[in-house]
Length: 125
Image 1 (tube, rainbow, N blue to C red):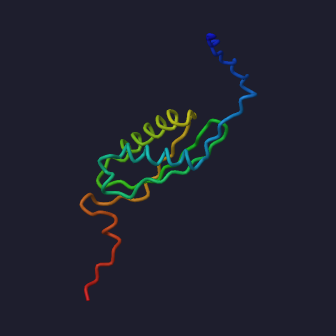
Image 2 (cartoon, rainbow, N blue to C red):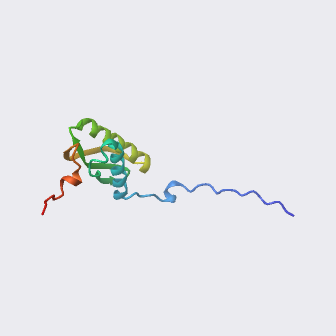
Image 3 (cartoon, helix red, strand yellow):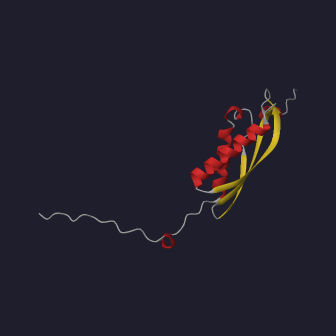
């Protein structure tokens, strides 16, 4: 019975020969929208889900997040929380630099009225 020779791992190929990974803009946009939703946990039930658009150039992502907030609300604090969370998640999940996160508040709605119910036609016949 012969002893098996130890297996050796070949050295890794140089970086230019290994190829590259490209993450689609829409994937980064989904990461951004989910991160914005996570940043707005308290308002998640009362508002429409955030929507994000992203432009990626090399490893730099520029993000625009559209969201709804309850009224009254600290818009500046909410926007800052969304910016921080979106930046952290994209850097963590996609290994991209995020120099800019534009937060667009599309709608302010009273806390006691859900947006889905407010848009319904409630005529009685």
